[in-house]
Length: 359
Image 1 (cartoon, helix red, strand yellow):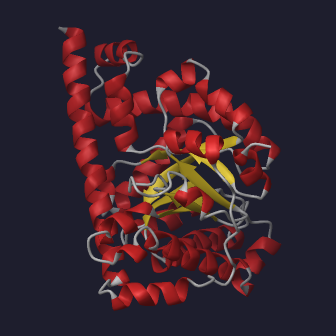
Image 2 (image 1 turned 120 degrees about the vertical axis):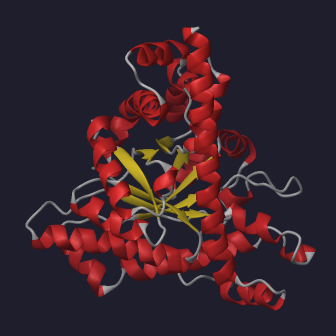
């Protein structure tokens, strides 16, 4: 049995953190579904920027949309929605088979809205309607301003992937925003089943402290934070408040491990896959990491419900001068800014390509 199937059979969903038109048109995504137990997909502005830059398969669509007067963000979302809709159709059988637990595809609102609650709500509603697929999650950042947007989107019945979470506190805040939206739906007599995942970024922790901590602590902080979040996840799942919404037919917002490609060339290229094996979670990974895990991965021990030894390990990081609360806030801020930079590059690239195709 392949490593990817073993992990899937242990109860973790394997998603790919990538989308390209080539992947869709050449049958690669379908192959991953059939051979590597892939059950979902995530995207972000950086991924689309790289995809459009490296492929000519977007050229005809860009030219057609440009001739219709589309430009800027409008042009991008038209292009992205074409890919997202096609990917969602690939995963639709998984979504139906699992009653909406799995089989999701994610599209992000403009990163420029990370601190704009009203703008995020309006964009989430618009994108979900235009996607026209039940298994599309709209990505909303878990910033302070994003939390009320998450609640309102869930209350409106829009499936949400909460992004840019870096700590147990970030995760719990996002989970409670989801919970409030579901509780309001129950009170209003609406269907409480609205899909959602909460995406915790892992590898950026280790990259941030690599020059601050001794070698024996390298590549261990992200996993320790993940263990703490998994404990919070299981505690919430078993709490009376969440049990009440389950009793009304609601589903749990699943915890998703994001940023799981190893950045350290001295570390195992499947470190964040093997180390974060855990039932009823999702691991979305770069394409090269998916291939690496399929080739030589091992499932490893499952995460402990109680956080294992992560508490004492985090104490070692504190002793080494790492302020995890402050670093989590910085990582979220830096992550939001990074996506905005990619967004600007993407729009500039689209403008340039559009001009060259119409000249």
